[in-house]
Image (tube, rainbow, N blue to C red; front, top):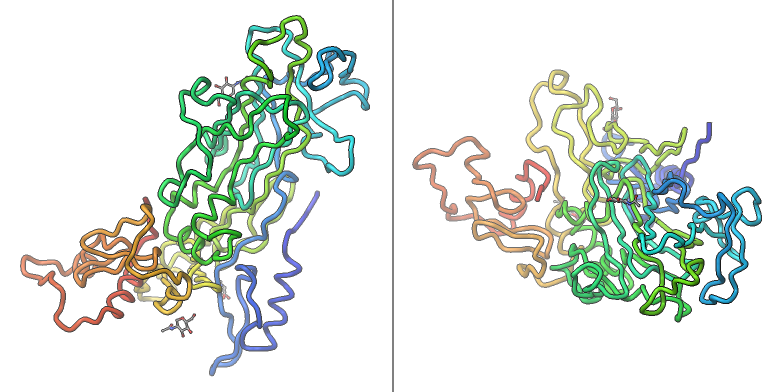
Length: 460
Ligand SMILES: *[C@@H]1O[C@H](CO)[C@@H](O)[C@H](O)[C@H]1NC(C)=O
Ligand SMILES: *[C@@H]1O[C@H](CO)[C@@H](O)[C@H](O)[C@H]1NC(C)=O
Ligand SMILES: *[C@@H]1O[C@H](CO)[C@@H](O)[C@H](O)[C@H]1NC(C)=O
């Protein structure tokens, strides 16, 4: 049994050291789930939002190729050197280790040259398309934290689609299209991630940036996670607080960076000129030397440790949650509905722990999600208040956007988007329940109550 834990050493150190003082001197990014603090009642646990460290996720995936027999070398065949149709005596032979190019070589360590790579059979059955699906499966939801980078040993494909699944491969959505000619290949206008904005960050684009054939030196294809983060966190991702605030409130945005599987659909190899050279079909094939995928286990901010055990990733859940993603409350801890942890207030977040079931504590709790207080929101986004420059948050019923993170609601309304009548929540709506704003309400109190009154996590 192979057991690997990422991150635990640092987390333990912080936990232990923080016992010595009321607060640790420096917080990491949600790298502890709890810490001991001193209060009037003595030492108590203080719970906070937490997440596993971002790591190289290619160590934990399963790879599958379609068609299954598309890897070169069985039977042995010869292929032409990259870009040189007159040097066609290179050999691929699956039964000779030095001449074999199995899929594992896409994920091994790439240090000094020569690099090791997976290679497909050549396009000898032209004009039948040479197409290959490479499916990467984690059997676990993971959150991407850095660009996906694919390094080709051959020329970069003329046409390719990167797809993702969020349901363990049952359904697939395109993530990005790549082509030398987007209009021709996919009937899409070519775009670059730099053309997007906060408003359009979830748009699926076709890019021509990475598809030039043999002629250029570059071998790399990106799926740009960091450029998308930067729309919220600024260049060089300095304001992560702003990104975290946005991820907290916008499920669609969170889901965009979340996957259980990725699929690279290679649709047309690099041709490099307009016509396929039919006399030298051994020139055309796919070869990939490296795939980089960085991310973290999705644990809903209820775990810092993700365990790889028996070829399976599992969050080591805290806050009395359970499940592979800490997606529900433990038995006997269902005193309020399960809720993910919250990144806010920065930097500690809110744990939203599961509490003992009602039968064991008597009265049900008043709120099932604790939202951050006002001053911490001011800190998390220094932008001008009340201006929503992001289309993802639509305040309703006259609510105004606050710091791009929350809605400020008129007195009669509540909910994160001001979508609910306050009296409805109190169960006191009548024909004359006075839904207008009370005369003496103060704005600060209004915001606080809007935050606390949110009964459910936001679902778009
Ligand atoms: C690749 O997967 C897609 C679905 O995502 C499927 O339509 C296609 O037939 C597959 N191609 C190959 C070569 O298996
Ligand atoms: C979970 O339950 C145990 C047992 O009642 C309790 O000691 C612990 O503090 C709880 N943890 C959290 C995070 O609420
Ligand atoms: C609000 O958050 C700030 C910063 O985290 C903290 O100093 C302050 O005590 C909090 N106020 C309340 C009312 O919880």
